[in-house]
Structure formats: structure tokens, C-alpha cells
Length: 431
Image (cartoon, rainbow, N blue to C red):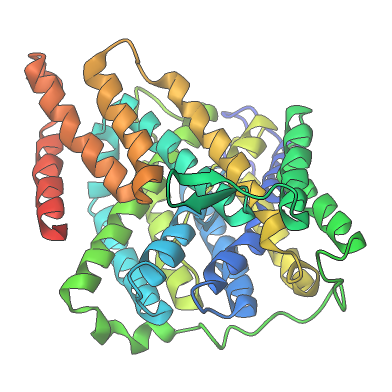
């Protein structure tokens, strides 16, 4: 076991990896609460999504641990589940089974691109500054969704957005949840998000804002309402609107995962010369998790930025991922307790995760305008257009133009020109 996971060369041990795995699981455990709440707004069964979330997380995390030997957890992405519900299902009025079929097709395409090592090549050729901008932009987008879901930020016909009614009991509960999470995290409690949800839920129950669960441990909710639904709606995908959605799923998931993988691999010291060893295997694991997740009944799984908490606790190998998967397996039996937790308690987690991801802005070279402006556009346009894909596309269009004007054409990878043309065509199609 030690030889398989390369304990000696990575300077780690069973105890260190176990502590790291437990830390990451506790940091990620909120996804079991938040993902069903987010996807249920599209009409999906909350219980089925809970089970699908846990199973997809178990399978994806085991795959990346065993195939790539990475100390990383995989679970449904917070950015992508929001895109699934709010942009595709509610925004475009696409039924969730059809949208889920779109996730399946994009996942299959992901697997093909991963096997051909095309994803790995594209990730490695993206300028480092733009990689950091993508991560930060997704952070701002996720945080904006969290602020909206808690009622802290509301729509306003004059100023577009405004501060909500902070005297409302439910908004106050959300603010309390956020403050507890923040205080725990700044004090070094790695599982601060999870414990913040627990504490705020208890307070909510005391004041009658959160229902008291009828049980703590129970049977695993049935996958029946969501399992395999994708196979009955593949014929509904072949129209211009759904093809655009599939492309967007593919596009958003590609760069969402790439940005997170880059961030956590760099923190673990696994990145060498701006490249990630075993990136192909890690991306294949991520791709397979996407296909499996869609069949089970959840939006696209991805490498989780919360893995950074376990890496900070000493996680260096795939054995950390084995422990994370074990945690999700145990959690499957606690659905009655988790099902009563509301968005007011969980949505502050989106704000916290967004803040963590936004820390990547410090790594952008702001002293060079040809880098700063495209990076800024990526970051700003994600939340303002409510689209990760749009932010990335605009930035990737501006970057080669700015570099060409500066006489730095040789510094642009040829694939960036291909993406430039593809994104121009993408906007022409949308128009």
C-alpha cells in the first residue's frame, strides 16, 4: 500500500493521510446538503439527488485517488450545479431530464478528449495568469449565487441589485451561518464550513426557522426518480438550443475543473514547470465521474477546491482520497438529518468557497495591462453575465488581441488562436 501510493517519495504516512482525508471530507460534506437543495429547484427529487451526490463523490474520489494518486476529492461542482439549475433549467426552461442528458453527452465527450490527451494539452497551454483568473472568476460567480440565495442580495429595478431585508429572521440566520463559518475558518478549523452549517441549523431549530428532523439515521433514499433518466431523453438533445447547452456544459466543466485542478495540485507541490504530472489520469477520473454522475442523477462532478484543506493538513497521495470516499459512504445513512437543512443555512457556504477561490487574484500579474485586462474581464463577466462560459470566452478573445498589439505573438500558443476563433463563432451563434 505504501509503495503503491508512494508514501516515501512524497514524505507522508498513514496517519498524516488519514487526518488529511477526514479534514477534506468534513470540508466537503456540505455538498451533500447544498447540492440536493440547488438541484431540487429544477424539479429534481431531493432524496434521489442526495444519494446520487454521495455515490458520484465516492466513485469519482476513488478514481482520482487510485488512477492519479492525487489527494483530491471529487463531488458535484458548486458552480456547475448552479449553472445547471439557474441557467439551463430555469433560465432556458429546459426540463431537468433533458439537461441531465446534456450533462451525460458532455461527459462522454470529456472522456474521449481525456483519452486523446487533448484536455491535458489545452490545460497546459493556457497562460498561467488566465488560469488564476478563471478560478477567481468562478469564485465571484459562486459567491454571488450564495448572496442571492440567502436573500442578502436582492434584485432592484433601479440599481439591478440591492441589499435585502437584513431584519428578516431567515436572512439573519444566513448572516449568522456565514459569520460562524468565517470565524471557524480564520481560527484554523479546516471543517469550518461543515461545523458552521451544523451550528446554524441547531440555532434555526431552536427559533423555529428550521424543522426538527424525525430521525438522525435512516435508510438510503432511492435513486429511482433520477437513475438512468438520461437514456430516455437523448433524442431530445438534437436541436440547436440543446447542442449549445451541451457545448456550454462541456466548456464550463472543462475550465472549471482545469482551474481547480491547477490550484490544488500547485498547493500540494505536485506541479512541475507549470505542468501537472499524471494530469491525464486525473482528468480521465474526473471525466468518468461526470458520466457516472449524470446516470445516477446529479450535475457534473469536478475536483473540489475544498481539497486544499486536506492538503494543508498534510495530504500528499491518493490514500487521502480513499479516506474521503469512506466518509461519504458513512454519510449515506444520515439523509433524515441532512434533509431538513435549508438554503439559508447552506448558501453562506457558497460565499465562503467563493472567497477561497477568489484568493487566486493575487497570482495574476496586474502590472501588465495585456494580462490584467483580459483577466479582469474573465473575473467580472462571470457573475455579471451569470455565466462562467461567457466570462472565459470574452477573456480568451481579448488576450490574443492584446498580446498581438504588444508585439508578443510568439508568446501565444497556437491553440489559443483556435479558441479565439471558436469563441467568436460561439457568440455569433448565440446572437
